Length: 185
Image 1: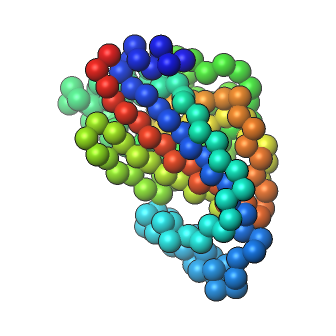
Image 2 (image 1 turned 30 degrees about the vertical axis):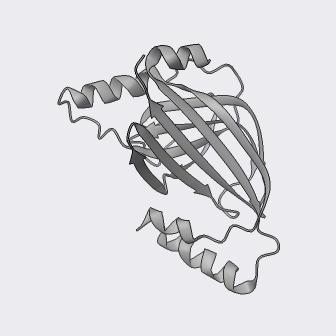
Image 3 (image 1 turned 60 degrees about the vertical axis):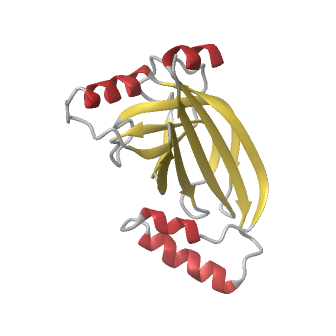
């Protein structure tokens, strides 16, 4: 997989952190409810979300989709069909081997907005929060997409990883941090 990433000029690194919410104080729970309601108006407000104790952390490199690169190339050439913004983070339950030709996850289960996005030099940093009340399940794959909508399989797939063992319960917040480094191939 690293050879593939080197050939196409980008390296994707995903960090998934699971936080136990069961021991939060009442004020933290109340604050989280307000923040969760407000995030549809201002996604970056999630940086104030009270996370609790970290119980698991996975770090994985992923496959960057040719579809995502095609979208960026079109944007660079003046085609404004797509913004080029990675706006959705996606959890899936499917199994298989991701390939650069993927245009969607194997079995999308839940998607969420990107909560924060920054860049420094040739590195983009993106973060999503999957709160304790949003979704539960055993997730086997993750990806994100450019210009995704609220519907399943919408947008232009940017990245895809599979073979995960991410179990999320209704007392756990999942924070997924993505780091994409563009490099000379």
